[in-house]
Amino acid sequence: MRTRGYEALVILKAAGTEHEIAKHASQLEEPIKKVGGTIESSQHMGRRRLAFRIARQTEGHYHLLRFQAPAERIGEIERLFRLNEAIVRFMILNADETPRPTSGLVHTAAPTRTGNG
Image (cartoon, rainbow, N blue to C red; front, side, top):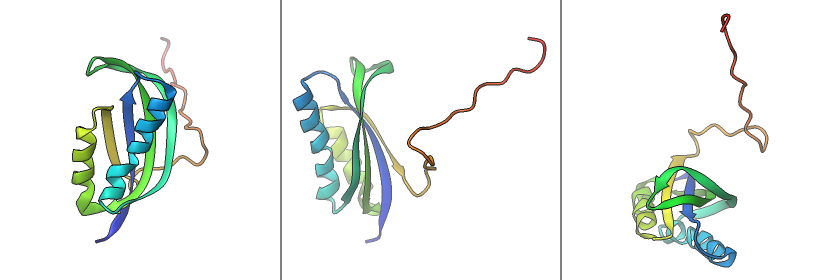
């Protein structure tokens, strides 16, 4: 089985103590390791307000995982993430196809105005 690089952005429920959130974040690695994957990095991105309510949640703890896993087993990781009640929403992307910023910050261009408006 050929492994590929992936990134998973996971939103955890905001309810609970910092200790519980850290415990849930460490449990995110279990499904990946269970299918034969390896964790490259795990980064807590903080508590943020959601753009809209998801499963009665208005805030969530964002967590970014970078990992290597067999391409055939990503469906199993997604299934295990769906079964985890602490996860509000998640997204798994192929890291080989996602552009990485050159620095730690993502820069966006300021909007430009045209016309007399």
